[in-house]
Amino acid sequence: MRLRNVPGSRDMIAESRFTIKNETEKKGKWNEVFGNDHPIHIEIGMGKGQFIMTLAAQNPDINYVGIEKYSSVLVRALEKQEEEDLPNLFFIRMEAENIADVFAEEEVDRIYLNFSDPWPKDRHAKRRLTSAAFLDRYENILKPEGHVIFKTDNRDLFDFSLEQVELAPHWKLLNHTFDLHHSEYAEGNVMTEYETRFVEKGNAICRMEIMQIR
Image (cartoon, rainbow, N blue to C red; front, side, top):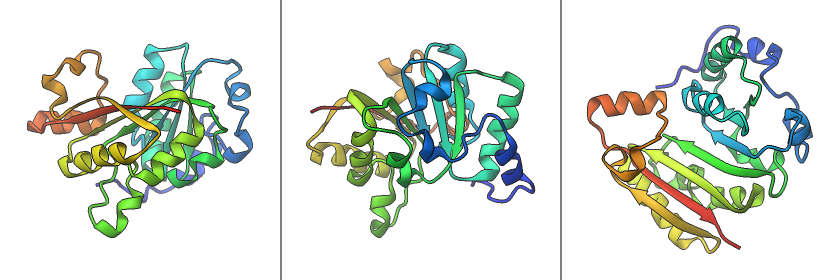
């Protein structure tokens, strides 16, 4: 379970040069934030940042934005970034529902969703980051043929996600697996903190990649 209260975390986030403040003012201007026109990849629900920081270090010609709503989790990523000082990575503390207020139409090339909250109760289905409601939000900010890559160890959430893609008129399922680490997609896979823990326990990791079609 994620910690929700770390003393001083909000102050540290507010003071950090690696966090974006007044994020809605950056909409349509992310090339100015990074100082280049490189592709933009975002991770929604980035946790402590292991996944996105690894990608940023491996791919200096791609700009990354990590989004996390819990201050106490985001602050751990900030501590790592203070050491690494990756120039192509910034963080935002915000709710995922507001994503279209932060990025302009066709401003994002790829979205990563890793081990998202499953929101198991049916009445909360719209809160799931792979729901039709969220796919609509992603459609607003992704470039044509932009990709969403989703990983989870929750089979019920994964089955739900596959159903949502099938029902969505502007999305195409490119590939999927119910056991990532014993599939062709394991090569080059970057693991999150949760993923490392689940794999050590022997849990199967599900993964799907979808593409926006217009």
